[in-house]
Image (cartoon, rainbow, N blue to C red; front, side):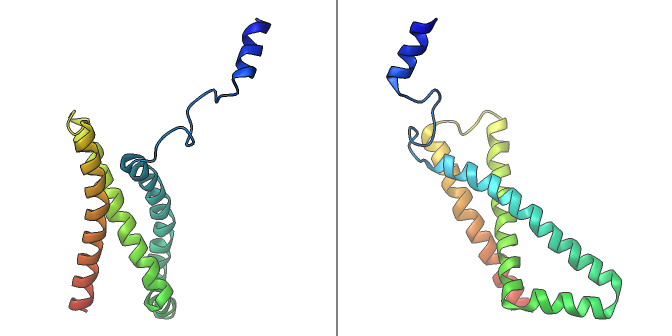
Length: 135
């Protein structure tokens, strides 16, 4: 038993793969972004609840919330929330495609990962352009 432990100690290699071993890929990055957007959506939903509560609390409360969300920081938060929502949605569509056993070839995986990023940016820009024009 001791010889196995000493052999393992002499090898000085990791016991399991980690980021220094793996090559960074699109699918790995999109997986991390999918988890990060879930956190952003969680925090953004708190802001959405703040807006709903201010709407129900009366004109003074709503005026302060409208001021906050109309400020540059508010616009930045809303833009980030929109992008996170679009990215998380498209990541969910990517996983839905995989649930049907499709898109597992390396070229298809990379294409779906790239389309998730490009699609989320494009959808966010379209939504904001339409919102700003309709304003």
